Length: 531
Image (cartoon, rainbow, N blue to C red):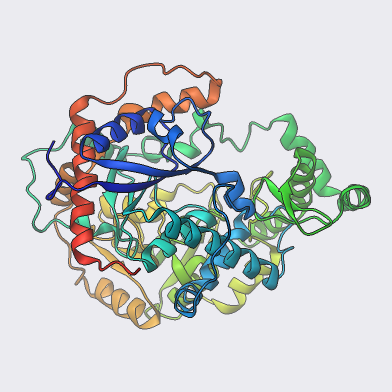
């Protein structure tokens, strides 16, 4: 396995790489002279952690989320002007991401968030200066606040970052480094493809072109536990408390007297009375979810009262907003993590006589929901006021019926865009996604982009390529992740520490390791490391 060009020793910082398949990958990396120098993850006692990662400095992900300095660092460095200026460019995004994990809404002030951000930046810069890694390797693209800070700090120091990205076509993943244009590797040009499609991709394509039950996302399937009818005892309790907010106020007063201020940077963490980040108890999170239930039930009642029956004879754009908060909207959608901003951009760009059909995400108005869910009565009133041509549709309307009769599909980075392409509908992408180079996808950066795209769609001038050629490219570039992912899911649900089944075949692991190393070599040639 001589994949490196010069055979030099490469120092690797691993993030969240504790799994059975990563054990096999790291063995391939070590054969190619990739030496681990640090591991940031859930802890050294993880049964899936490769033995070599137990012998290097470890930084607990829990400590990283709390902003705690690792005990193997003597002191934190001072941040110079250039580092501060670089991070400041992304400050708005970085300060928004924690909202996804706050237990009691926006309880942290701007100053508190900013202080925490630069505390984490100081820790990560100190780690990089201490260990001097050549590359950061992570199991997935940046998801939480800490992951995004890792990426930006490494980017500043020109340290390559390598991730596995989910392409949302079957259970496929591929290696990326550039988070600004993730779909560039899946561009049909310059890729040698086979004559046919693999069975999993062909089945996925067939399902997406059939009825919605065959194409329903896994997280919305009854097998995953999502059902509007089936309600657990926990949901019933939360719905009851949501109808009686005064009970929640009493619970909060009791908690405040005993524990101090409520706030959080994560669904697991909260601020104590001394403004230190600590673990939040299940009781704290239960109170938060119950209080939010009142907000969501009011929003649901208002939204349903404003819904109309879709008129499929008139031209319209189908807008599929995201369930929030999620990574797909922040940070993936960038400035368009606000779904109202996307709706307003489309509404102001529509040709004469067109409408905007807004069908809320099925999970957005369900309780219990995530504490960072932005759906409120005022949110929907704002949409009606700022988008006079918007029409609300009930969440349980068949999305394929709406999609098939639309002129195009719009979303932040949602899977609905990909489904639309596979069903022959153009898509308006507000952000960046792995399928951004799929045929019929327009990347929108403002009203002018949106207006030009809709004019082309109205005139039938959408630059369509071959969907099958695109899927062949995906087939050639990506790897089947379902070969080992299902086993890990079953273990997490049962709590077992023994793998049930075999990992992916050696050939798949070899190919994936080769792609990581080739991507590193490619990026390293383009970077000039800043000392």
